[in-house]
Structures are given as structure tokens and as C-alpha cells.
Amino acid sequence: MGVLMDRKILAIPGPTILDLDVLRAMLVSDVGHMSVEFTGIFSETLRLLRRLLYVDDDYQPIILAGSGTVGMEASLTNFVSKNDKVLVVSNGYFGDLAEKILSRYPVNINKLSSREPGDRVDNETILSRLEEDKYSALIVTHVDTSTGVKHDISELGKYTKDQDTLLIVDGVCSVGGEKINMKEAGIDVLFTGSQKALSTPVGLSIIWLSPKAMDRLKMNNLSPHYMDLGEWLKIMRSYEEGAPKYYATPAVNLIYALNGALRKIFEYGLDKWFNKHVLMAGSFRAGLQEVGLELMAKDYCRANTVSAIYLPENIESKRFRDELYRMGIVVAGGILKGLRDKYFRVGHMGMMNLNDIVAILAAMERVLYSLGYDIELGSSLRGFQEYLTEHI
Ligand SMILES: Cc1ncc(COP(=O)(O)O)c(C=O)c1O
Image (cartoon, rainbow, N blue to C red; front, side):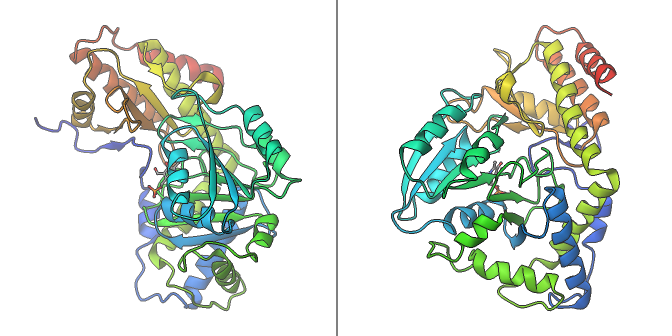
């Protein structure tokens, strides 16, 4: 089976398309981690990371070497002490991962899970659970990449703002693709990975801390040595003050790449960038609807960064994805237990654009058609066009 297309469109929910300027930005050699050049790039990157979330100097971003999971484990362990109670909200695989990580530590975990795949836990249920007991932390996944479900965080932040409970948010599949004003949303700890909506190579974890979260860092916590955010906070500040200190070597070239990606986003225009994600998600789904494909996420909680889509009966998942690959489109399979072969996932974030969406829809149509699905060729394009005519 030959590959028909010489150039592929990476439409998985991370890693995402890498812009050549971003790759060029990381092509530096002979730059030490304590050098003046790198210090300038590092501190500019931290400033841009604040602007990305519309916050000021009282919020602190921290960049660690490691994939999103490193940021997740750091965020989960730095704010809890032995025997603390934590409330985990799970809308899919990654909510469950938070529980799995925490279960290695001596804390009491209480978990609320969505009723069915594609739904999210009601905020009223979460708030009433918080009323019943004292929790050190509430952990919520903003966008669960396994289901394409987005959680409304700000309703929770409004409540936790005036409580001791810290609101810790997994933004791995949302930061950079969903517009977040961290302060307004009342988020205390937010983490992401470099390889999703920030379209930077895999390997960086970014964690933002609110003033309330930074106060809590002083307390006894369960963090492993490498992920000690209190230590890293000092390092980030030292770079911003132009006098770098050492804790562990920062990922120099990846930070150059992140700097390049952030510059591109701000050049594009931040609000316009977030709106591009709204348009990509909306037009893609309008196309899917015309073809009769069903989304996993309910209409009231759909993310702008990723879609989980049920396959029609009798279409085999691997075959479908292999055929799409032959057409130059790379999509991801399902990851929910028991449903793995019943759905697939498409990432529409980062450096992807509306022209890529057309190509993805067109290839999907051809593949479905060739596999015997009853479809009118061109119908998804009609949905796409109608949506954009109304929304641009
Ligand atoms: C929502 C979410 N959280 C956490 C992670 C873990 O990140 P990583 O795979 O970069 O370690 C992922 C990865 O896809 C994710 O989508």
C-alpha cells in the first residue's frame, strides 16, 4: 500500500504541526544555559507566557524540561501534604491519570467522574462536594484529549477564589488554543506541554502559579526533588532579573523554539489566534455534521482544540486511519477503554489553519466513500463553507 501524498498533515491532538520558523529558532549552538543570550530569550519567553494568559507579574510561569506529565506531577505534588484531601474531577483518560499519579502519594483522593464518555461532571456536583469537606486542592482537566470535552473552569474558580482550596487545572490540551484569562478564571495552578496548541517540539512543561499558589509553596509538600516548584520559582526569577542561578539545566534549544512559537502567535495577534481555533473547530464540525458523523462530546462542552468522533458502524478503525494516512492525513485512534476502536480523534490546534481543515475533511470523505459508507461526496465542504460564510 503506497503513500499517495508526499507531504502529510499532522492532525493528531499533539504533537502538532511545527512551523519552519519555530524549528529555525532552535537551531542555535554554542549557547550556554547561563549565557547572556539565553538569559534574554528565557526571560522574554516568561514574559510572553504571562501575556498568553492575560496575567501580570504577580503570576509566575515556570518552564521545566519534560513532557506534559512532568508539569502534571509537579502541579499535583507541590501543593499537597501528607493526609490532605484532594478532589479530582475526571471527564476522561487524563482526569483518571491525575488520580493515578496522586495514588503514588500519601493523600486522600476523592474522585468525581462524568456519567458517560463525552459528558462532563456538573459544576453543581463539584461545588456541593467542596462544601461538604475541606479539600487542599481541586483538580480539573480543562480539555480532556480522550473525549474532546471542555470543562467550564471559571464557575469553579469563582468559588475557590475565597477558599483555601487551590484550583489546579490540566491545560495540556487547552493552553494556547482556548482563550484563558488565568486571573479572571480564578485558576491557581495551570500546566501544559509544549507540543499541543503551542506548536513547539515535545519536551517542555509549562506551569503558571497564582499568588495564592505561590504562598502555598512554602508549606510542607510532597514534591520530588526535580519538580520542586519552590526551587524553580527562584530560578525563573533569577533569569528574569538577568542573573541566572542553577537548579538543573534548562532545555536551552527547546526554550528557543518556544520563544519562536510565542513570537509567531503574538505576531499573528493573540485574540485572532484564539478565534482561529474557534473557526477551525466550528467549520470542521459543520463539515462532519453534513457527513452524518457523530461527535463524542456533548454540544455544551466541546473543545476548540480537539474532536473525538464516532466511526460509522462497519468501518474498522485501523483501516480507516491507515487509508487516511495514505491520503496524507494523520489522525489519532481512540484511547478510552472499551471504546478504542469505536472512535478516532482529530486535533485542530496550533499552527494548523483552515486550509488544512478542508484537506482533512476531503480526505475523510474519500476514505469513508471507498470503505462503503453511504455519503454524498462534497457534502462536508458544503458544511464547512456555510459555517465560514456565517462566521468570518
Ligand atoms: C489533557 C492532557 N493531560 C496530560 C497529558 C500528558 O502529557 P504528555 O503526554 O505530554 O506527558 C496529555 C497528553 O496528551 C493530555 O492531553
